[in-house]
Amino acid sequence: MLETAMNTFNLHEHISKEDINKIYENVSSKILNYFEEIVKKINTEIQNRNVSHTLEEFMKELDSIRTISSIALKTTEIYYATVEKLVGYVYESRRDAEELLRVMFRREGKVDYNKLTQCLSNLKSTHWIEIYRTGVYSDVINNVEQQIIQYIIELKEPIMQVNLDLDKIEYVNKIVSEINEMKHFQNFIPSVDKHINEVNSFLQEITNNVFYSSKADKALRYLEICKQIHVLIRNDCLSVLNSLEEFIRNFSNIIQNEMESSFEMIKQYQNQNKEKGEKFTDIYRTYRNIIFEKISGVSQQIIDAIKEFDYQRVADKMMALQSSNEVGKHYYAEVKQSLNASLNLLIDGTKAQAITLGNNIEIEEIKLIGENLKRIERARQFIEKHLDAPDEIDNCIEDVKEKIEKRIKRFLVGVKTLIDNHNFFEADKKIDSITLVCTLLGKYCGKEISYQIEELRESQKDIVSTNVVDKYAEMNINQYTLNPLTDIFARFEQVNNTNPVYNEALSTIKEKILTKFREELDKAKSKQPPDSENIHIRRFESAVKYLPEAMRSALEVELKYCKDDIVLRIRDNEKKLQNAFSSRDVKSMKNVLLEYQSSQGMQSFINKGEELALRQIQEIILKINQNFENYEIREALTN
Image (cartoon, rainbow, N blue to C red; front, side, top):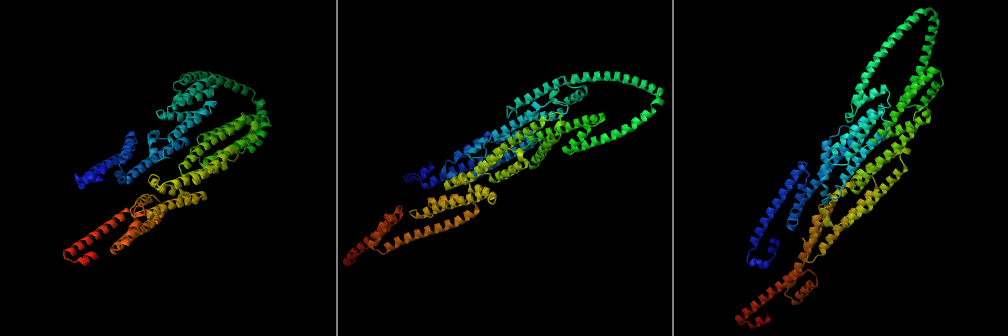
């Protein structure tokens, strides 16, 4: 309303323009002060890491104030600086959440679940930031929720399938404890409770069932471990353990008495037959020691070969034990048990490594998994007939391959998101990393993954060559304030030397941008009447500051030359008009005015010409009147 009052000339007869300007400046100053107060509140909220609904309301209020055109011009810099702070904070929260999730997924240490929950909560409340910068939020919360649920499912699946014997209960306890830690997310992800309760119920049921089939010695150890599992405190483990321990103490006392009585009878019998048994005992002891030393040596060699995963040597030595006497067969049975236990540990460990692969797949972890899979295959090749469950080898290999492929596919989804957000440097690093992973895995990485990587490379090429180039080629320079070119140029500069596609795209974008700015200068030059501050010059100056330094410097030089040309044209027009009217040649004056009338936008020069003509006519009339007053008739007629 005040701006309208300032531009309404009829109103100036009643209210002076100075008073209106004073009121206008006063109101503008108060609005600007209020705008800055809101910005201070936003900065305080960001500093306190409090991204709440209030912050969104503050931004809406700033947007409302900036609907006033004069205020929008004055607050452009501080407004977009505030937007950048908001975007930076969201990126920081996102990085913190990803780092904590990486530690959790890869089980590298203790996770600060309170901090992680706070980070995710902050991210969830910032979906509105997409209004100001697209691609910042990118549905990251849904991706995180899916990853956490998938991680719990991957931890849960092997537990639901495992045979809960004595060798595996400690491993199961570790995984169950980790799953129960996920209760920190129950307010954030409601479906977490379902999986946790399912695992706890299954574990309680299966531990109770174990007691019906376990032998006494294993049951005791099993019960001792169960006492350490928090989830199982409510079941019958403790009462069963106490009853069993009491029974074994009583039974042990009975056996002890029987053994002492039996040994006493043996001693008496040996004293009666000492002379008859001396020769046989000596021979027996001599050859028994020789046989034991020989067979125990072979047994130790097998144990050493098992530790070194040399299954070909294991097979040769076990064949020798298997074909020897009863003592050798006894050692064969013991070594076979150790071999199966060692291979089971290798299989379970390899599966666990595949389960705990993080979002950023580490090369060293993949190398170890690949080596373990090769060891497991060598075991199938050489010692399959000595295994209790040879089918477990094929099941393990397929299971590990499936888990790795799932992790790689999820990894490739993340790379696709990076490409869509134009984060080409990180995307290239991750593509190179996953390509190396596939190379290291060899046959354990399916062809489908290789096809997906190639499709991702083609998609990246299309996005860079078409989407990004077209976006900035078609963008009006007025939009550079919301889409600063320094950002996309910086991203291209990071990868400019790694792939010719980036170099070509960057060159094309630069060429298109330079063409747009030069076209704006051409329009400024052709604008009538000539004006060094016309709309095209203002648009040029407003947009050029969002360009990289080198381009901005070059274009600012061209802008200076353009302004100089416009100033010269203004002076030429004024000089031409002044000369025509100074000559007092009516024909020359008429020609100049007709020339200006034929050129659109030259009304100001026409008005000036008319003023000069009117002034000259007034001067001539004055001279004629003076001539008549002095009776200078001839001079009057001449004028």
